[in-house]
Image 1 (cartoon, rainbow, N blue to C red):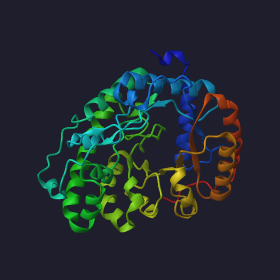
Image 2 (tube, helix red, strand yellow):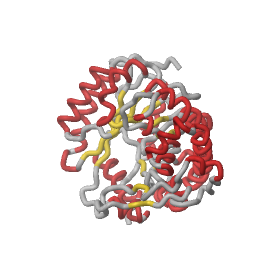
Image 3 (cartoon, helix red, strand yellow):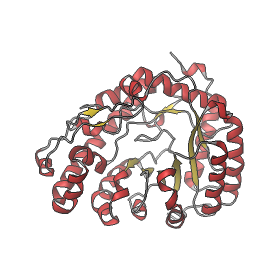
Image 4 (tube, helix red, strand yellow):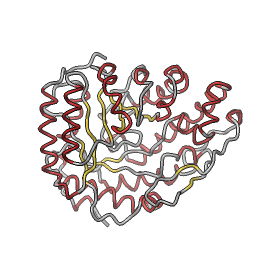
Length: 377
């Protein structure tokens, strides 16, 4: 079994990388935009399904990737981390949803069918214990990963999906959208119970990880958030609702996370019709994590709305070297001096990751020099 001892993780270098993120989030000038590049395992032995269903296999793969990234990109910015993962429907399984696997072994699982037939059932629905459904295995997996990381490799917590995403699993999309119009009180009641379970589960996960100092954030991102800003929530449903609906069905529930764990990050793959609402939270998230594929069209709006208020982690960033360089430069030209966009990308070992990172770093340094530093809030 692979071990942290195989990769010579350096605590001083890890701390240097963490300080870069602390300074960035504090609004202090830094010498370069972080480039969060990871190296794919060229000898991976397991499908996604095998990893989801077997924590030991998932741990082996996650630690191998963390170690390869550390070894192959010695001047990188990625803070070693692993993601224990049992799927994005673990809260739904606690409420009774059954999981379904398709024919493709490299696809993640989904909910077989919505367990609730009517949103009115929310009133009699008990709040599950935080070890119900997939949560028990997920929490055990966090403990396993954290123990294997030995305090050198951080762990994320489970993918909680976010309130409306869980509702979509429990009711189905059509019934959820109808409930927003026809029975909003029952929908709010269901969201309240989901959020209470979310909060209850976070505490057990942090305990399993060995404390907040060992986690990246209180949700699924495996990039490290600074102390005091570990709060994170997802809202992919916000891509398909109005700002008014976001204020009613999302904002008050996400606020419970941010008020307890700090204004860290909010995830939506995109697009982002509710972008302005993301920053109305109390406290507001300092970071928004998006998918380049689904959010690139929103960059002009992000530049205007997020100026001196939030930074962007851009997942699914192009990973082919020349395309990545061209895209990063285009993003810099568009977004400076107003908003920092951090590229998050995985690259194959054959693409010479150290050299690839150095060429991205040159753009990252220019990006930082052109930024108007500091926050207005």
